[in-house]
Structure formats: structure tokens, C-alpha cells
Length: 377
Image (cartoon, rainbow, N blue to C red):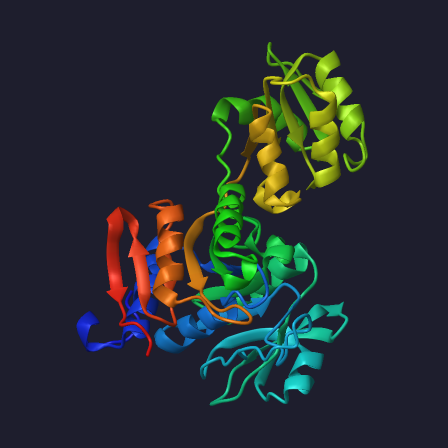
């Protein structure tokens, strides 16, 4: 499906053509729910959401895990782009956000759970206006909200999220994700590149083999917090209510039971990883398996600690990262768009398509440039 009708790529503005290329990629993927994740505030994710909704002849549903679309960034004090859903968009937000943004829409359903800003309601967007989107607060509620948006006719649901609310990209909620990076990710361009690439490494962790999955499948059905598997394929469930704060205990059990594979059923924290790697012998051959990348409650640098110690980190359910978007904005001086974009292209390579939906730049697999806007004056 192509957004916009009746004109060729060369006849449209570069930024619109870039959005077309991004949406075509999303449409071909077959995902029905898409998380748009910003690595930091002002990474441009709201701009991406607005661009997709504005340029595409498609009935979207829209919601958020937490709060998005506010007028002013609560951390930086900078003005933020507002979410402006086209007429007919199905929006799930709270009563409080509707009142704060003075947004009127036809309410279709009130959902059966509360948030700090009141109940979440689903409605149909009117002709104009901008809305603050504050969705449910748990993954179970978010999954239910996405299902209800689909039931009301949304062909595809956009979930506005952030890296500190990575649950919106969980395979239990979203079929795919677009990741937004920008000049505010680091103090220097090198830091931006390093953090962006490290985050992609985390979000695209490899899937376990069927053999490994079969070894721990019996324990998965019982919601085990930690399971160890030895070289003979024998699985042992560790009797722990949580692994948080138990890195030393788990490391000792890994050694005692001659473990080759360790499955962690809950969140993987920085403290746990540091304690585990500190106690284990250097270069200890081990595979650590988690449910998916959204359970990693730690910075990318901590994840790389596993690789430095020779420990493989894999997931039961991989995330489908469809694209990376770039925003050269930073304070006090934005990066030159092409310089910023090309630096990201050089670092990311062919791992994932890259788009700048404002400046009309795109890099697709195989080195193809979908669009090439002139330098801004």
C-alpha cells in the first residue's frame, strides 16, 4: 500500500516521499500494531507518528503507554510537537488528557481500567485539533486497548512509546517497532552513534534455537523465574520468587549445576548482570535467555558486558525493528541534517532502513537512497 495517490515519487515533496517509503516498508511487513520508540525526549517520535497519520490514506488507531503529546517537555521545558490525528483516526486516551488538551472527539467506548488521568476512552477524531495521548499503564491493559482499537475498525494501531517505556514494543503488544534516535541522545555525535548502535544491538538480540527452546519449554509454562540447563540437557528450576538482587545466588547455582543455558523469566537488571558476571569465572561458556528485549531493565553498556565475558544473550521472542528514524535536533545547535544522517548510515549500514522524515532523507537495504532532499537553506 502506498500513501498518497495519483502522483509519482519525483512529483512529491521529498519529506512526503520519505514518509511514503517508510510506510510502504511498514505495510509490506504485515504488522497490525506498531510501536514508535524514542531513545530520548526530542528524538522525533511524535513527528514520525504525525507524519505517518497525515500522509497515509489509512485508518490508524493511536494510543500510548503512559503520556505523550503534551505541549511542553517536562524535562527540558522546550515546546514539543503536538499529536494531530486526522479525521477518522481512532484514539485511545484518558478523560483527563481530553480535558487538558481541550480536544473534542466522538467517544465510542470507555475501557474498564483507571489511570492517574482518569479512565481510558476510545473515540473517533474530528476535523482538526491536537490531543494529548495518555494511555494505559500496564502491558495487559495496553494489549487490551490495542485489541479494542482494532475492534472499532483500526487497520493499524500506532503505539507511541519511549525507551524508558519499552514495554510498548513487546511482542505481546506490538508486531513491530520503529526506533527514533536524535541529536539529544548524546553530548557529541560520536556518543549519539555509539548509543544508537548499542540500543539496536539490544533490540535485535538473536532468537534462541528450537533445541534451546525445547529444553526449557516445560518450565516456561509454570512461569519460572530462573531455569538452568546442564550439558546433558537436564533442566532445573531455581526456587526463587524473583532474580532481582539474586545475581550472586544464581551465579553460584550456575557453577554448582554445571550450567550451559540460564533462562531468566523476569526482568534482567543492571545489578543482576554485574553480580552474575563478577562471580562467574572469566570466559565462562554460558547462554543467557530472556523472554524478549523489553525485559532488559539496564543500559546497553551493561548488556555489552555479557559479550565481553563471552556470554551469549538470546531471546525467546525477537523484536521486529522495521526502521530507524533520525532527528538532527539538539540544543543549542542542531546538527546539519545530511552530516547527521550520513554518520548514522555509516554506523548502521544495512542492518535496518534509516529515515529522516523532516528533511527527506532515506537509506534502504542495499545502499538505495529512496529520497534525497536538498540541503536546507
